[in-house]
Length: 172
Image 1 (spheres, rainbow, N blue to C red):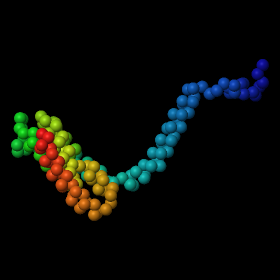
Image 2 (image 1 turned 180 degrees about the vertical axis):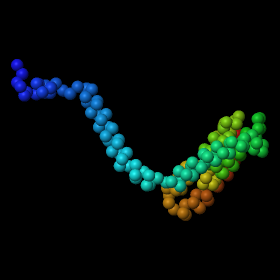
Image 3 (image 1 turned 90 degrees about the horizontal axis):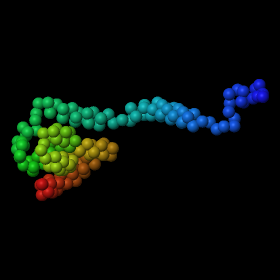
Image 4 (image 1 turned 30 degrees about the horizontal axis):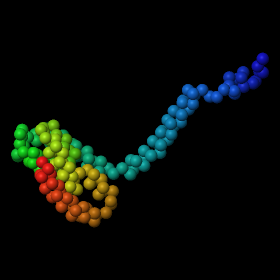
């Protein structure tokens, strides 16, 4: 017979290991606690150190595309339309990338384009030139935190743009 206050009579199983489901539950609970602690700890840091200017810039790029698309069709750009030159599309991809960055330029032109290859060449080449040509340029230049690098970037970037234009035209 069991002793009155023995582990067996109190519902403890001293001889058998903890069941698999109890271990899994403990791991899940531990993971939830860790995630909540990390979120509570790092959220204020994230909000304080987030580059709000860069975030607003990206948001405005995409608002710009939506606004532009609402009243302007890429086929209205001079030289574009069904069956038009791939080189003209390539050049428009570069030009629009210099104004609104290459990702928004792609989103603006892709739905109305019959040559995604020409568009891809154009917007990728358009990543050179002005700092706004690519969102990656903006991120890298902001992270550098050196005003001198902006001028150095453009001194190097424009020759690369010229090279990309010539190379792209040759490949198309």
